[in-house]
Image (cartoon, rainbow, N blue to C red; front, side):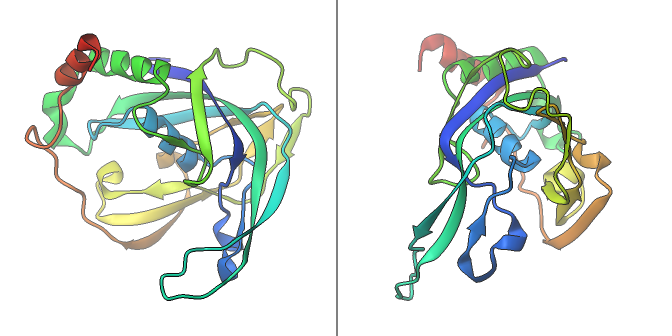
Length: 237
């Protein structure tokens, strides 16, 4: 696919929180990563407001295992609460994603250089990302490396279809939709032989408004162009 990358992301623990299971401070991970969590990982590899990162599919490589831990959440008003967090353990995923130019960002038209952005994206991936990689939450450190999607043996390669029920797909922000609203998307994914093929955000039919929100404005004064970033890579900065 045009402007695409394929990579593996892995870590000791992950917490892709099911919002329905956060009552009373408890947290329980979904069995698989959400579209939004993987999009966040791609944007940690390389992000510009010029681009919209699109996650195409994910392949679950390791068996789904969970581990519960007693956690003391930070309470700024004092207290000694003990909460139970249930993490995914020993996770490894293959991810396929690509980018398009954000049609709702006419203020970034000056930065639409497809070839240069793709080169920077690939170099950033090869370097392990421009920002730290987290698997759902900050305490779950992740790591990325190049791969060929579909290569190697996955635990669920011959499992057939697994229906995962209703899950959060992701969040709509104003600069991605052109609407001055923050929205949540829901969907009903099916894992087929270990692979989940994602709907595009605009294909999701279950959308709920969360709150009103205004997009942030960008222009050449507060955004580095693709030319400047590419020079940094070539100069070793």
